[in-house]
Image (cartoon, rainbow, N blue to C red; front, side):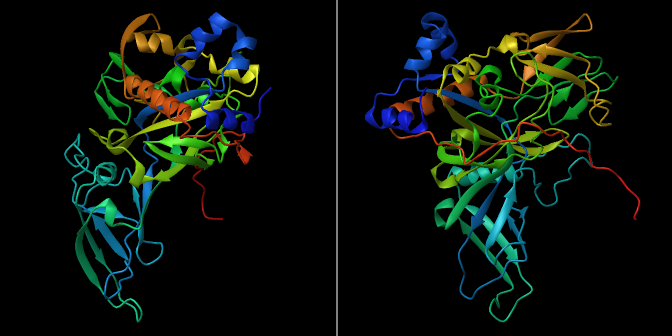
Length: 395
C-alpha cells in the first residue's frame, strides 16, 4: 500500500518506476500482480483525437484608449465577449464568419475555432477585430490589431468535456452517404468509424475513478494542467462489464492548462466535411499505483473493452438509444469488425501512435522528476445518467 506522498518522494529522488499503459500488461504477466504493485509507482495513460468541447480564455490587456469589447473576432472567427472588458472565450467548433457551412452540402469547413487555437499555440500572428458600444471608462468603439500568443497576458485552455471514457462505433444503415463528426459513413454498413485510444485511454485505466478526479494533474498538449471538474455529460452510472469497464460513454473530464506551454504537435485544428470544425487534443494522465487493485485495472486490454455500434442514419440523430451490437477494441484496431454476420471495414479518428508518444513523454517527465502525481480533492461521480433535453410547453 502506497500513498501519493510516498510516490512523489520516489519521483523526487529519481527512483520512481514508471511504465506506460501499453507496457504494464506484459510487466504484470511477468512479475505477478502483487510484486508488480510493490515495484511500479505510476502507469501513464494517454489519448489523442478530436474533442469538440474544447476552447480557451484569452486576455488581451488594455489598449489606449480602453475598449470594452462587446463583439470580437480572431481571424474572422467569432469569440464570446460576455466576460470582462478584454477577456474572451474561443470555442473549438466556432465557424469562421461567412463560412457557407452546409449551404452547399457537404460543407468543407476549412477554418474555425480549433484552427485558431492551433495557430495560437504555433506562435502565428493573428488578427483581432473588436467592436464596442462605448462607455465613459471604455470610450474606444472599434479596434483592429495583430498579435501572437506571446502578446497575451493569459491564454488558458478550458475544455468542458475531454477524454470520453468510451464511445460509439458509428455506422450507416441508410442508402446514402453521411457526413458526421465521426467522419464519412458509407451507406449500407460499408464502413464504420471509432474514436478512442482503447487500452491506453485514461478513464478506461481507472474505470471506477479511484485516482483520477477533480484536481488530478494531467499532461495537456505538453503543458502541465489539471482536472477542474467532472466533464459535461459525465454519466458514471452506465452499464459495465464484469471488469467494471463501461459499455458506453460514461465518464468525461473537464481540463485546463496554460496554452503558452503547449506543443503545436498536440493541438491541431480539424475540419470535418459536412459537420464543422473541431480540435484534436493530446492528453496524458498518470495513474498512481496505490495498491494491487488499482494496478490490476490498468492491465485492461483492448479485448476487454466493448464499444457500442450505433446507426448514425437514424438511431443517433433520433436519440432512440438503440445499440446494434458491441465490439471490442482488439477487433476495431484490426481494421475490420463483424456486424450481423457482415464484415465491415473500420477507421479511427484518434491516433494510437500519438497516444503512445504522449504516454511515453509523460513517463519520461515523471522519471526526470518534472511531473508529480496529485491526490484529487473530489472524486468523479460514479453514478448518474445522462439527461435528455425535453421539449415542454410553456407552463
